Amino acid sequence: MPFHLCCSITETENIAQDQFSIVFDSVKLADFVKAGQFLHIACGDALTLRRPISICDTDKSLVKVVFTVKGAGTRWLSLRKPGDMLDILGPLGNGFDMKGENLLLIGGGAGVPPLLLAARQAAALPQFESVTALLGFSDIGKAILLGDFAAACTSVEIATDDGSLGRHGFVTDLLKYRLNTKRFDQILACGPYNMLRIVSEIADEYDIPCQVSMEERMGCGIGACLTCSCKTKSAGKEKYSRVCADGPVFSSREVVWNEA
Ligand SMILES: Cc1cc2nc3c(=O)[nH]c(=O)nc-3n(C[C@H](O)[C@H](O)[C@H](O)COP(=O)(O)OP(=O)(O)OC[C@H]3O[C@@H](n4cnc5c(N)ncnc54)[C@H](O)[C@@H]3O)c2cc1C
Ligand code: FES
Image 1 (cartoon, helix red, strand yellow):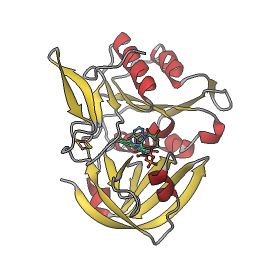
Image 2 (cartoon, rainbow, N blue to C red; image 1 turned 60 degrees about the vertical axis):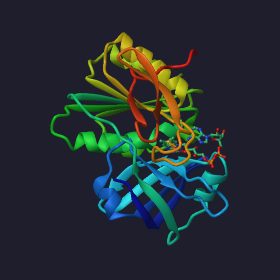
Image 3 (cartoon, rainbow, N blue to C red; image 1 turned 90 degrees about the vertical axis):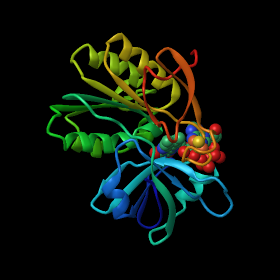
């Protein structure tokens, strides 16, 4: 059951090029959220539609979101200051379902933040022996949350497209390398569409259950308008699912991927 809340911002930071974090106070949200769920945030009077942003972290009553400035909504958010109020609907969506003992998280760019909460929630469960994170960025200037992931995970590896930090190449190359050296029970992935498609193919090849967090433009955020439809399949039949209400997290085998 989502809440409609007005929350006071306690902290804002420009954490990297075009990337910002906002921390706000909401004991209701902090107590209820599951990693992979998102908030629908009103971004000023000029924009009718709210913008979906994943929950990155919680700490007691505090909730953190991390976002990249893309257009008017995220630019408006980036200009908020401590003491300002945010109009928030959430938590929304289903979130990750974490199973097994050895978990692998793979994130790319703006898809990295929600995996931090997944890492922290998994690390707090006694069943997990290890939580490994593979994080991909275009370059060192875009790399975020590295210290937080290092503190939450058993191991963290980085890839950058230009080789300015970690391994030179795509994070999906790191994934193949890692899967050849260790057996994982589950993969959780969040990032650009093409990255998710390739992760899904690799997960199939290695026969590892994989959940992907899908991104679509949203209208209502609560399952009523169908703006956010994506093609999925179950029992061999294709259908349209709503990313906001049936997702954003889907089994990678459920998604009908577009051709590369
Ligand atoms: C479930 C979910 C969780 C998300 N979590 C985060 C997050 O934690 N951090 C983060 O930085 N971003 C996240 N996003 C993406 C974020 O919602 C969009 O970047 C934002 O809505 C853009 O709004 P805008 O007004 O700034 O840009 P607009 O002017 O609306 O659009 C600018 C550009 O971004 C593209 N875009 C807009 N909305 C989306 C979308 N929903 N998915 C993909 N592309 C989009 C547009 O096609 C356009 O090219 C998430 C999206 C979804 C669906
Ligand atoms: S955004 Fe309206 S149904 Fe998903």
